[in-house]
Length: 326
Ligand code: AHZ
Image: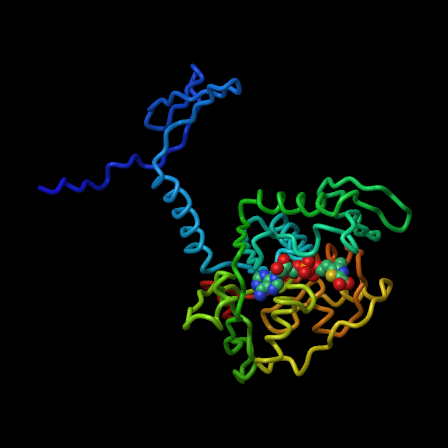
């Protein structure tokens, strides 16, 4: 006779707590014979492989379920997107902020300065953002220098991820935008960006090699696009606005002029189409403004401005179930 198949015998996942004797006890008061010994006798608490799967799946898919309606979606976790997420999440802890990043590694181009060198240059007054994050720098008068760009990027990333109202889905690409008639337009002609269409990036990169692999969606009253200048995935929303007929043509990023480029990006950060704010270097493709090369102050200040714009929109709108209704 075949052996009986028994389900439900796996212990549920329960938090481990340290008890008086240094043994780990979980919430059901089971104790585990663990030892932190680096002389050859290190012992872990036992685990079933399925517990590991369930620990991840439960959290990830609960998070996707919960964030199917978000308050703000930020597309792209480069220096502009992360600066935006930090300012927004700190200023408005009540908002559900969802960051979608196509790459496995968040951070965009901010892991290095210019020409693959490590120092990062930030023009004043954007050094105030470094102060707020607690990132040290050397003062060179009109600008400051962080010893390694990764010190800025890892710090802002860890601060953002530690905020309870932020989630980051990396290795996930935005491959389209949700667009609806804008309820604020009495004629019903104007279109409003109302969410994002997502897919695992590895799937998004394989639409030409496989049969149809349909996407997922996230609804939000405000979308902030921070996908950088043109590249394999860059300037995503700017290009989609053109192909959808919501923008006549791309302005195309112009040649390098640090003095013109940085204020143009910061001061031009705005809601470029109803429901869609654009920040960082993506804006240079939308507006046809100069690039600044390896100076990062404008990315930080543009991110902060995008966060302020998002708050302004939310404070002047009536939102029901993730949709602006008036
Ligand atoms: O992976 C991209 C990167 O991390 C991500 N991204 C792009 N398209 C996406 C999509 N879905 C999800 N469809 C997407 N994620 O967006 C991030 C963009 O980061 P970035 O560092 O490229 O852009 P940024 O505007 O934050 O910073 C630009 C930094 C530059 S470029 C530049 C110059 O060339 O002159 N100067 C500066 C300071």
